[in-house]
Amino acid sequence: MNDSLKTLLIVGVLILILWNLGAGLYYMLVDKGQTKRTVNSLTRRIGLSIALVLFVVLAIYMGWITPHGVGRSPG
Image (cartoon, rainbow, N blue to C red):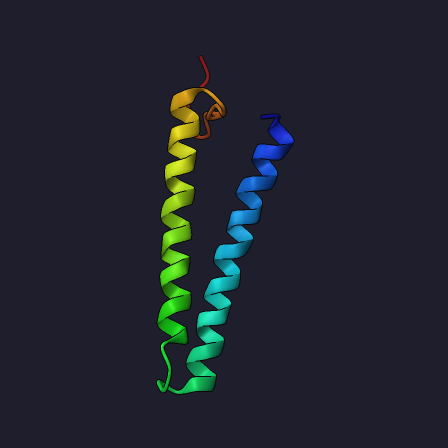
């Protein structure tokens, strides 16, 4: 898997997470507690967030991506 595909995958999942967060807010305002669409949307957001974190951890462990060392002191 090349670097641009990995970046695109991570950014795509982040966009889906934000989409579900926005949908949860919209459903909360429109439905006024009458349906479960808000809960379903926020549940999907949590699931996507957990999946993204697990994917990044797995990718680092497998060597597919490497942390770039933000915050490390040189040398």
